[in-house]
Image (tube, rainbow, N blue to C red):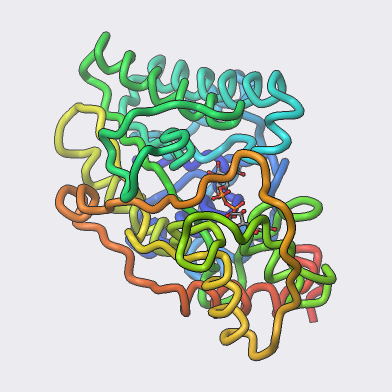
Length: 340
Ligand code: UD1
């Protein structure tokens, strides 16, 4: 009996593999290295001292997905694989719909064929669109404001409809807030392709000297210091959330939805200052106009995950910044950094 982890070499996937192996689970990992690196797999093995089966496959290749199920006794699937860059999705909607949806169809169809009905999906706070109030709760209205968000919402709806049609499925939809940080070993972390879009990887690349300064998108929002507020969550906490979700999968067939965040909001300037403390030097920034599509405040109410999964974030903004910095300073060029 094994757990299939799609996208297991990615940022959240690799950290989740570590927690699964540490919890004694048997995993099979699949990844096409589109936005990830085989060195993440070496990192997982080094951290845990455990080995696992790996398939370098694309989820669009249904024959390859089928072969994984034919060769392994897959009982549960954690599905991370997918494109995740919001601005790119706006430029290339067809590419996002095509990859994220067709890939997920292939996974779900193959699960159905092999009688595997336990599925954890990597969703996102993006499904709340522009929330009317904060903190955001799971029963808030859902909407998509970009193609990336549309793919997450369509897959969430598909899960609900599949369960309605066949209530032997157990589907858990995990809505992540803003994942940051890295494993404390500094062996795995976030390594985006090209110039980062998200705040933390941009900040770490400025601090390490790869980028000249951080652009802060707007300081005239209705927030305490004028910069946007978000719910940053340590990636190791998120990873542990998946281990807890797997336990829940065993209870009864159902569709369950959980916010995974800390419930605390930090502004962009709060993050910059916490990061300066962690790295021990000043980080240059410039205030720039607002970025299209940004909302002033977004943080969650994580009570449901605490009550039903027994999960609660353990790490604060200090650890998030320290661990992000350790990863970036030990690996200035991410996974492309030459080994010493
Ligand atoms: C973004 C995505 C969201 C996705 C999440 C995953 C957008 C509009 N939203 O959320 O759908 O689920 O990532 O992690 O892309 N900021 C700067 N300078 C930068 C980068 C960011 O000031 O160089 C600010 C942003 O304006 C925002 C905050 O930092 O206020 C966080 O931005 P980011 O890390 O991109 O995350 P979100 O936009 O919240």
